[in-house]
Amino acid sequence: MENLGLHNIERSVLATIFFNPDTFEDVSSVLQTKDFHDPFLKMIFEAMQKQHEAQKPIDPDLLLPLLSQNKIFNEEEFLSILALAPLVNLEFYLQEIRNASLKRSLYAMANNIAQSSQDQNKDAQEVLEEAERELYELSSHGELKDFRQSEEIVQSTLSLIQDIKARGNNLLIGLNTGFAELNRITTGFNPGELIIIGARPSMGKTTFVLNMVQKFLVSGKGVAFFSLEMQAEHLMLRMLSSSTSIPLQRLRVGDLSSEEWSNLSQTSDHTAKLPLYIDDNSFVSITQLRSKMRKLKSKQPDLGVCIVDYLQLMSGSKKGGGEAKRQEEISEISRGLKILARELEIPIIALSQLNRMLESRDDKRPQLSDLRESGAIEQDADIILFLYRDDVYRKREEKAKEEKARKENQEYKSQFVEREIEPAEIIVAKNRNGEVKTVKIQFNKKFIRFEEPSLEEERDYKTRYETSQEYVDMSAPDMPVIQ
Image (cartoon, rainbow, N blue to C red; front, side, top):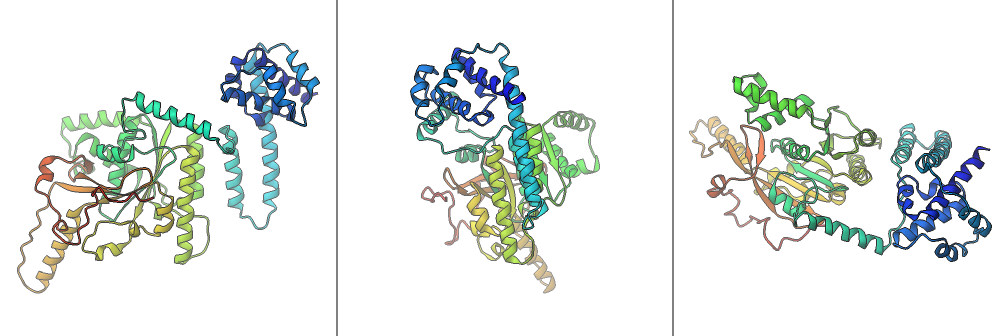
């Protein structure tokens, strides 16, 4: 009796659409073709959807010739639907159909879990991951997408261009990175993109991404931050130092004036209300990260970006050791992050360590080959950025010379002068949809933040490589776009 009742509800919903075609958008925002239980009713709803997408009337006389070509067409049933009265409380009945559809899907999923649990070739974690993915798709009303026709893609693309035009030809489409030139090159960080930020230790890649986080939060987008190396409180200290312009070292010891305490209090109150979510577990697998992100995205639909600090500290599901196994594991993690970015429709930013081999080169600017286990990372990433500060190496080399002179009982006066504000570079090494070049910025050591460059800092600054024959100008106009 229950199935008969559901069948009549589905027929009445279609009758309501025929009576008032304007209700189709209300229905299609709740129901999908798969939500109809009866195959013939599915066929009718799918035909309605095609008419709507083609901007043609949803008229029985227009649908009848199309439907009658199908083997399961039932003219008597079709005419009986047209004879039904439209529903008054449409929303209630839509939820009834949706509820029945979800129950059928859950029943099918339960059977799949039961069968998978008996499969000796499947690990328990793998079965759990499959179940969780299916459950997420159900809860988010998701379905596997079929091929998209050129006409629909063209219309979608034109709508995107119109949206951009409406913004006043603003080149920033995605999330604001906080750096104007980087925004111009990348159009910001966009949904579905995997962005890799690589650097050697001490270059400040965590600080760099935290500066971006503050810009992301200003836009009202939520930020999920997986910090595998640093405690959440330490990250917050850096953010507060950057926001208040109070030196980090003084924040650490609480050495603040009354005015600074007031500034810190106001900034803290504001920051506490921002949609920032930090997971500072030191061990996170790609499976756990996917699970946590799906749950958070379900609870916080406005979540705008996910950040992983850093990629090499994560683990995959593959067992075993050795370099080959680790490369497979990194490949799994990298691919998993890319797929998750597309699934959740957000950019995912992953920080990455670089091989120490670059330390042996004269020009220590990073290259794509310097990425650890770089094959999979380079392939999956849409954008790869390298952070470089020449002063870090200059200081290190001068210290090594001083140490050598001390051991040889010789005098050596260092030529290096440490600066409070150092020049820095963002090397755009891969940009799937744009150019590659070097963006000049600066690092403010006092407040632990990267900033747009000032002319005073840039004017007389040259690296020791710029006079070398081996120097390569990464900003040259004929640099190729790396795909």
